[in-house]
Image (cartoon, rainbow, N blue to C red; front, side):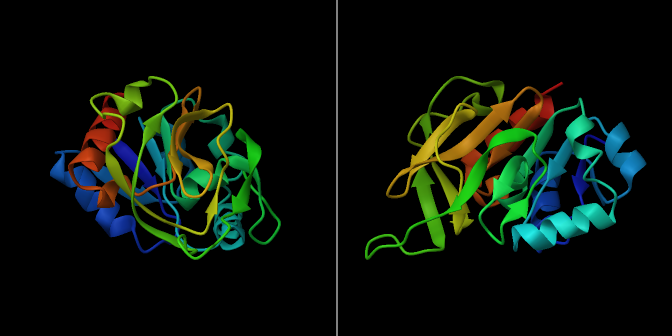
Length: 197
């Protein structure tokens, strides 16, 4: 097994598995604490609300386990947001692995909320997860909440303000966009994740 995908109850689990399978990787979707702790890599996906997602993680007894992982961990979309301390969505306490607060995007005439569509990345610093991904490449976003650019940001995008598109601290990475829906650039990012040790 090259990666375990945390069963967060989201609708994107199958598409995420298919994206890894296209790269020749074997994955398993599970909420089993032991399987997740022993996995070589862990993916934390997420769709829906932060409060519901944290409730599912608590029911599975994963809230205490996920911050202790030492293998590469990739949070995707809501999964990335859950890595932070707090979300303004439902005043939710999250995993606290990364410092900061997830905030609601502000809508205006040109930028509706939720933000749905393709946006370009601008790199804040180099990282193995971004290898062979050029600044300016497009990735697919679907979200109403975001993390402002901060000290753990390694790539950002603009949606009226600069927001974190990719974050990292130690063995924890997160992408606000969906790499499994981001064509060849997303496939390169997932391949890079599979190479992390």
